[in-house]
View 1 (cartoon, rainbow, N blue to C red):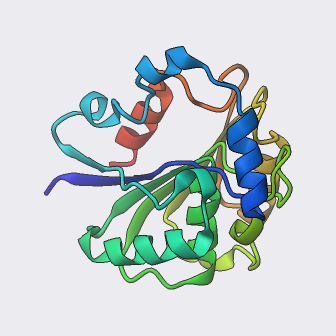
View 2: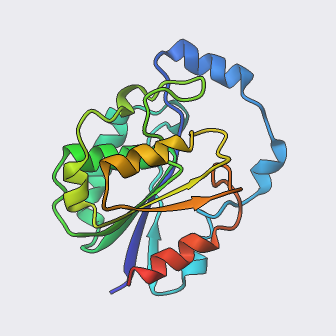
Length: 200
């Protein structure tokens, strides 16, 4: 059986539709980025043929709502295998942490990796609205398998201190600190390849 990896991408949540429209009007455009592939797009290729990387498109990622993501995620659960590895990047990380803290997952999870995941409610110029962590993380600890937190000290989007807050709530977790990866939007992430392979 192939080793299944489920990767939940990031997104942007807003309190109001007006805030979302303002974001669209003022967001900087780096046109060259439209031609680039980041590490998430090449993960399956770099892990190799024995891995099956699932990258579901979560609803309306540029105006993300937790309730909508929850519905879609729960519809996908029947397709996930036992011993799945979950990876949540950015908003995808807090989504995975929140869902596994508030719900019972019906299968065995091998590991959960949180990459540049926000913990605090207030972001830089935005609110994490209904993605807010409202429960303690004990249930996540119990069912999340090996929990690994990756964060870079120079992340301009999610404060590095958020990784420390996750560690406090998840004392058994492993924290991997980077110096210069910003928000992990680059093309290469060899450490994640090594870490995933080491789980088997």
